[in-house]
Amino acid sequence: MAITSSSSSPPAAHHPFSFPRRAKQHGRPRLAAASSRWANRRASSSIWVNPAAPPRPGQTLRRLVQLGDLDAALRLLLLPGALPAPAAALISCNILIKKLCATRRLADAERVLDALKAAAAADAVSHNTLVAGYCRDGRLADAERVLGAARATGAANVVTYTALIDGYCRSGRLDDALRLIASMPVAPDTYTYNTVLKGLCIAKKWEEAEELMAEMIRNRCPPNEVTFATQIRSFCQNGLLDRAVQLLDQMPRVYASPSDGRISVS
Image (cartoon, rainbow, N blue to C red; front, side):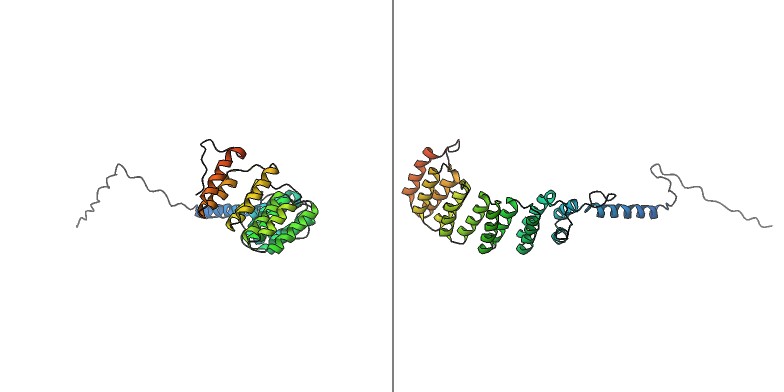
């Protein structure tokens, strides 16, 4: 009788740093479902502040502007009755105007301004942004038109006028800039004067620049470092060192210089 001996191999030694294998997990479908729910919640919360609450157009507009979705923000804003309280969304609308101007969508920016004006919610910032946008694009006639409308409604301030003055100076229309600064119904500030002074110096109209600075001082508008640096730089660049030194000597009488007594003209 044959005897069959079955020899079983000894059990493998357990490595001190090995761990027993876990049973195969079957939780992947639940994990995928949870991830899907989270993605949907995140997508909805990127627009709605609270997905469980009914959407409020003002919050939606603000979120769309923050996300840079200008087309969706514009569509929402221009829906009839979409914003029952436009004044509450004024800041978002002004940011939208600024972003539209930055992308040269000036017609759309003016549509936003018109929507604010129709709701009696437009302010000086709304007009200032559009005036500056038209000036940067070289469309000074449109900038003048927006300024005229702002002036008629009392929404124009010194920044509105300065934006158009800067546009005139950049386009070489210095006579128009001087005419506007002389006829402003609000007092020009230091930045307004400095804007015109820079334009005059670029055009090498130094006598007119000196006259404008004298007018600035007479009107009790204090010059600052930029006022002097603009002219001194122009004098130095054109070899008029005597005039640069003369203006530098005038500084202590009309301007409190920085503590170190130096001024940069580079």
